[in-house]
Amino acid sequence: MTSKASVRKPSLTRGRAATATRPDAAQTNGGGEPLVVYFDDIRLVRDLLGDYDANLAVLEDRLGISATVNGNAVALRGPDEACAAAKAVLEQLYGRLAKGEMIGAGEVVGAIRHARVIETGDDGAPDDGAPDAKAQQIRTRKRLITARTPAQSAYLESLQRNNLVFATGPAGTGKTYLAVAFAAACLEAGRCDRLILSRPAVEAGERLGFLPGDMREKVDPYLRPLYDALYDVLAPERVERGLDTGVIEIAPLAFMRGRTLSHAMIILDEAQNCTAVQLKMFLTRIGEGSKMIVTGDPTQVDLPPGKDSGLNDAIEILRGIDEIGHIAFSKSDVVRRELVGRIVEAYEAAPNEQATTTPAPKTGGNA
Figure (cartoon, rainbow, N blue to C red):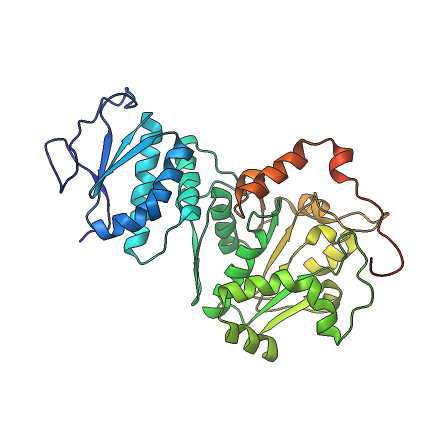
């Protein structure tokens, strides 16, 4: 059995698939003969198409084609470029299924986004070079994570290549999740001795009052997104053991001052809530054998009045230095769900005063 789909000549038949004649390259097949893609394993085809052909419906909707299934063959009709992209997507996903991966609508959308990079040459990563059109992957013992946008692939490539990487952009683009997954994979592979994950302890517009408990219990609410990502990519017992032994450290930004962090993967999340002085302090903590990842959304600054974010300034100051990369995600890279992308787009389209002005926080403790 091979794991590669193929396009056959019209004189060949396979199973119950209909035969077809490929039109000239200059033509479109919207009203002519379809492009027929054949697969070797009918069992994988069922997984490829999804429940009730849901994955195929995503392909049709996103690429503006129609697809007809007949046994182990899929006939594609539409503009030549769109059909070629659909063929590439189906082949790639079929190959991933043959390797034991699971395929869902998210993987289909991700493959389409990468296929469009091949078509248009648009890499989605203006500050850090063009990515390979093939989706990059991270593997931990618990999970295989595949990039779902070209910018995510560029991000993973930049993490491999550079020792300091800035990732900026709206919520839902995978900035923090991919950073934690990459760091976890490095830890499991022995490429670092420990993980250090940090966030500034800044309230998002509301006062939380005095939190009970010890220091870890006081700061955990601020750092919960980092815990969530860790538990998603590593086994729970691995995370708990790492936290107990100090191999995994999750701490607020204030705890970084005066330290030299060597042979570690270091992540600073929500860096838009750092002042210029704080960010300089953090960036200069990096020691021998370490990599540092700084993520943030410059449009969601929660600093109190009179304090400015230092994130954009740091990126500009360090631009062009070897071993430092920057990936700028956009609303088109939102993978959390399409609704999040539409929310981000609506805020970007709104007048600046309406989109950025927030009411002053109430005083007097919890509201």
